[in-house]
Image 1 (tube, rainbow, N blue to C red):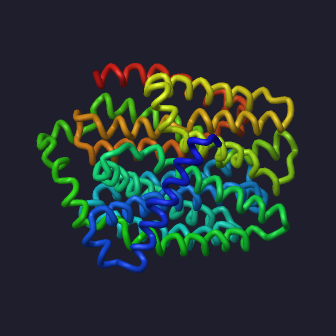
Image 2: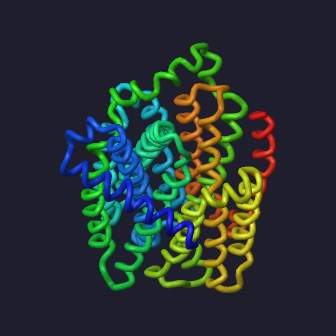
Length: 422
């Protein structure tokens, strides 16, 4: 993972995690009075919320082949079923953006976490397409709401901390995804049933939530820390998406689309194309998550060494090579390498875009964040459904070829977004 990545992770462990959580648990009054301790608590809460998002959504990935076999659905029908997740997310994201000022991140994060840990075990039990459609709709609602709320909180916490932290925050989401998929895959490999495996994940989410929710930003704290954004622009033109925001949203959409395809379809791709045992099908996303987590933990160092533009371009090329490897691989081992390259290439694209979004002044930051988050997570949650529908008719290999073309188009989108910044 690299010495710098581990040093950065250990630095966080010794500062925000130990210092923040200790004071949070034993000195709650001091937390409210001490600004630095309060910031450490908020950073810890933000990291754990990102971790929970990745942990919960990725834990579902190893169960997907079992769900498809249990429901006896082909790729097209199963893809339509997964579309319910995206529909729930699409409805939840704009709604969350509207409610976030009134209710605060704390309330919305708590609601989303409770919904996620409740629905995960039910996903392993659904026996009819209709039942699974309803469950997946609310699962997408919870994931979409949590995604918008935690990114909004991250922008405020990063600003108050006065140092770049977005890559590290998103790295925690990747770390959560990695641990989630590896945990469920390992349990399944040892013969544990899907239901018992996912119950274990829900129990862990309960424990994480006890540290995450109490110190998430309330509506009152958000008003005190984001007043300058409210005065940034009062004209309605800057509340509508600008070209820069749309370009950033498209880049995030494509990156999240490839990530969603890796999570939801890597297992099915390995079992159908390479006859891999379903119990080990989670290895594809595991390799993807390991590489993405490593890339994000190393993200700040890479940004310092290469610069923003070179890092994005090299990341895009790496992701393109990864997808190309997946398409032409003669053996499943090379498919795993392809997913690792895709994860490494995708690691820092979205964090850089969210940081760029925070620096722009062409649109109100809160409105811009809501817009880009909706576009990005729409790619993650609805894209896999389209992969299934299209893949049923042209094959998953051709679908992944199309994704590779979309990935390489980020080079052009990034060039035009840079022109808008200038």
